[in-house]
Length: 138
Length: 80
Image 1 (cartoon, chains in turn brown, yellow):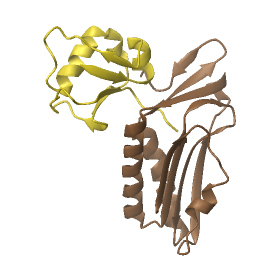
Image 2 (cartoon, chains in turn purple, blue; image 1 turned 30 degrees about the vertical axis):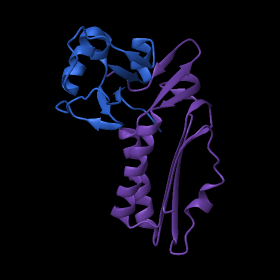
Image 3 (tube, chains in turn red, yellow; image 1 turned 180 degrees about the vertical axis):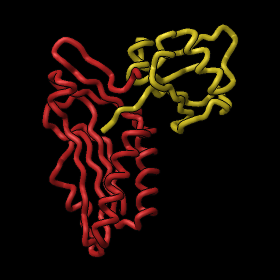
């Protein structure tokens, strides 16, 4: 399988190297997104993610196919966690492997930027006294 | 018409799946559905964007709706 696409309840950060490793790949690039403690100086106690899973998996597959073709990658990984996540927990991972490093660096950037724009996943920031759906309002 | 709601739209509507009664004026297209929803839930028009998915694919305003379609309301996404 040249792509691994998953929605999970928690991310196993140790699996990714093995999943991207390939005899023709001299470069493997991985991006992890994690829960940050402060948003505009306000303390965040956690994030809560939800998804429209059937559609998210479909869109993640399209995204992987686009990157595989555009950069001639050997492997692609896209995984997103849903549910409640605490500060420092990993919530998303995208990774690409290719013959040389420039292709996988560029592909990785494209994967995370496009994921944030198109994949139907939503996050709520939980503060001490309130919670806010991120990006919902202008 | 059964509609799925996510994120902030789920909070506005108060449920993740709602059978909406449009009083015999069932919307025929995605654009019409959006207009009717914004009339019924004025909070929707305050959102940064509002997309609709038909059978789990993003659908433009001119896409026609069939009775058996799975229709979902997609507020601004914020994964990652």
